[in-house]
Image 1 (cartoon, rainbow, N blue to C red):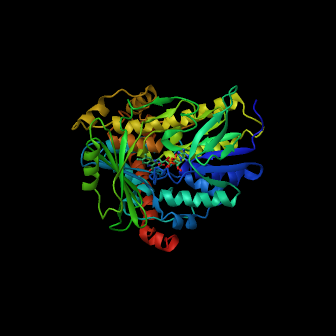
Image 2 (image 1 turned 180 degrees about the horizontal axis):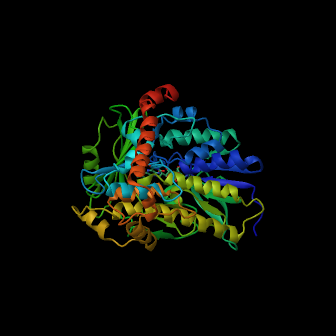
Image 3 (image 1 turned 90 degrees about the vertical axis):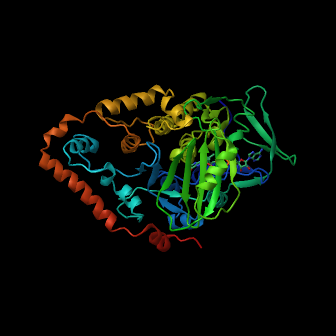
Length: 493
Ligand code: FAD
């Protein structure tokens, strides 16, 4: 056992650093001294602008008013992601955050839909999902009933600034300066202090490494090691560029598959974040820059910037007295906007198990086991998008279609194909409906439906499906346009 934890040092002030500092100071900061060190000389990664619904829970914990937050980050609402060209060129589908169809104790709605498809009763699967139809019709509102499940598109720089305000209001202090060296205890290997370029030494009991891909503490100091997943997730580069908006923002992210990767479009209130994630084995940086510039709408605001990464995760998210968060802990790639969520997971998990009385090996182990499970589940979900495709038109897509995949994912695919069943294991972030939407969207079709559905007559099934469709239509017809809602609810100054 180590000494009690009083001084927490957060190294790095990107989204991860400020999320950690804001959450720790607001929720358990009373008896802690929290210092965040960031360097104006080292820029943040500057991307990471699409989120998923659980972020709302973090904001509730931080007492963050939604309207003020949205104004501050020039935010728009997000109901899901449109995947274009992923299954075949010129075909698309939406993975929405909603629930599809109606609840029925007997079987998942999918099975009723499958039987209805055989009988010519069912329409497109998306017709039965409110969020999906609202997204397609460019409509949105925050409903008191909670009937719409949503997330946000945010300006990353503004979000970090907002979190900084929360952190400082709750007693965290910011220290400007570049960390030049890190000192460890020669017996325990624990980190004792960091020294800035100015010569200032900052001591701590617990260090949170949020220094981005470089992993200054977790890797460069503690040599924790990295599980490389590039054999499953081969993209290793991105080029990002911002453009001015040319029309009202849509309430969803666009993910458009290209020859050697995919392009994102994230609409904010006054600009659009664009980027191309690509595999350098099949596309050069220059080709990528040209591809993105050929495929953006609106005037570019900044020069395209290339970012290099390696997909995978640290062998330990928590090692000795250092917890890595954000890019310092690993990177799956941004296809389903899960990176900020994993920061949230790490910080809330740390808070729930905070080692006030000293660090125990067993809690490190438990923390790492849970983080691994979270990360590996997301990894499998992302690989699914690449691997289950009809595309074989470029070397990149042939590679993805034919590559080996984790056994855990193969099992999910086999189960779905054979029986139409999906499941949610305890650490799964994505619920059954997410897996179903992406599996169907990518072209997997179950061979059978659950026979319990045959208890329903065709007439009953027709009414059941019609009822589900009508309920979606009724809700969506009452929604204002996304732009109109933003204008009245949270328009940025
Ligand atoms: P960074 O933003 O890199 O911050 C690192 C910080 O460490 C900086 O403040 C820097 O000054 C500081 N620092 C580094 N070295 C030192 C030093 N020696 N001394 C002092 N300070 C130091 N996530 C999502 O959830 N949704 C998305 O849509 C999404 N899209 C992405 C697209 C791409 C192409 C990439 C690469 C990532 C994307 N992510 C996305 C991930 C997301 O960007 C990150 O999870 C998030 O921005 C957190 O980054 P970070 O704070 O870990 O690192």
